[in-house]
Length: 264
Image (cartoon, rainbow, N blue to C red; front, side, top):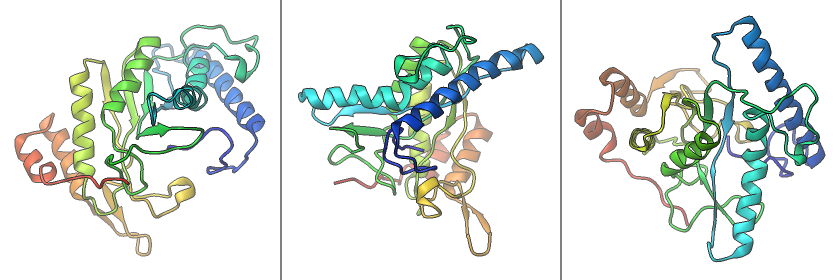
């Protein structure tokens, strides 16, 4: 889920030390590169990759050089360093020396992408653009960003694109069907080789440091009784799968009346 890789300490294990984060990212990348080759040794036809969390980082004020510089830095720390190491086998200096047993080159058979939101940047913190649509957690809803980050990754690492996570916090299920529709529509219109789409998530769950409060599921969960109830967004996604796309009937039933909340 969206969070800083630097020193916020919001997510587990709550370590605020950049050195620890750097060491963790480095070992993750080394492990992936080794596993990529080992898996192919054992099963040459396997499709090997990883689910890379990426988002759009845009300067809050495009005319402000500090905002532009912070956007570039945020993007590098949050996603580019890890993508270059795990997909390309090239370890940037911030992740330490090139491992002796990792040769630069493709370490992926598909580009896995987790996408949720866009950040309006003015420093090393998250923000939203004034008046932007937002979900229950205050994250901006920005469907075009899915294509933006996918296009960038595909340009550098061409391969079929798998959307391994995409979803939104919407306890009332008031805009989730529209969210899904608009992201799928952006994918279809992009011309990029999207192969798979996995929605996050099937049933409400524990969301990292936010606990049980955010509701991401197309199936509602009563945490007291464990009763599950399919939401309208779940019925919409089921209709998309059955129809092989968004029909006029399912759009009118589930999407047409939905609107997003607007942030400050």
